[in-house]
Image (cartoon, rainbow, N blue to C red; front, top):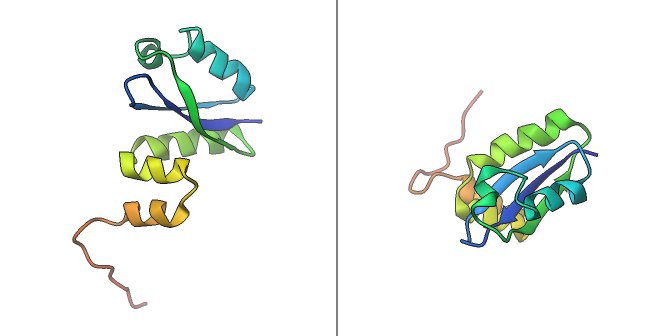
Length: 101
């Protein structure tokens, strides 16, 4: 099954990736220094979060979405704090606006 995953790197940064193969084999590639240039320079890495998806397209779409998230929002995802994810998605200082249809 396809996966999207977040790795915490040795420098405490995050790497977001996705794979259509087994998650374990992809994580081993990162650990061996052949997974990605970013993680190769920041070993060791540790799995912080992983989500399984029905299709590779869905896993890749989630990867692209998470790439644009703030660190606070990624930390909320890792903590399985969906209210925190929603709160981090709101622009600070901008009140919610309800639209009339």
